Length: 114
Length: 110
Image 1 (cartoon, one colour):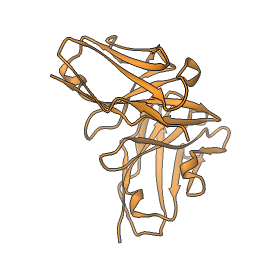
Image 2 (tube, chains in turn green, red; image 1 turned 180 degrees about the vertical axis):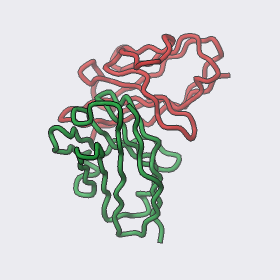
Image 3 (cartoon, chains in turn yellow, blue; image 1 turned 90 degrees about the vertical axis):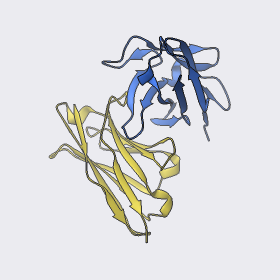
Image 4 (tube, chains in turn yellow, purple; image 1 turned 90 degrees about the horizontal axis):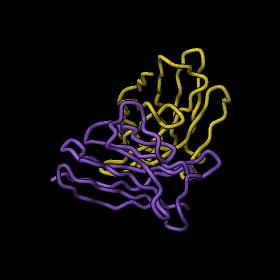
């Protein structure tokens, strides 16, 4: 399984960002797709997950209401949208695929700056 | 809120053995938390080492092993090598499909 994420984003405070994660070489619908955030010089933080075959996402309490994870089976792509961006959302966002987070994407830098 | 605890830093001599731990601020870690371990070097994505307490991920060398020691999950590196110098994160499954990472342990090999 190869996991490829979309490229870096620069956003204004208050706007939204949508990051994509495409997995190839496996059974897309049955995989668990997880999103993990890493702020500069900080640790890892689990944001939420989706299993495309079920369609319903599950979110960490800290991200309830601000993040939306969706799956497009037609393109084998999962999306993570973060809204009402603040400077504290500046981070590297990883997509990790598999129940054991077996396969990681390269990370997508998101910079929130006015 | 669930807080997962790890040693902030640890050092080991080349060829030595080191055990990193993963605990809970309140309560004990058991296999029911399906502890997993990840290695991250600067500028790289994390790499899965261990999942479900003690199952090595594909391609992970045998010198990495996972277990439960007392009331904590543990990652043991036997015969540490220079390129094991990394930050190691544990993660626990806390139920309802939710996960929590520990703060990470920076391992120095010297």
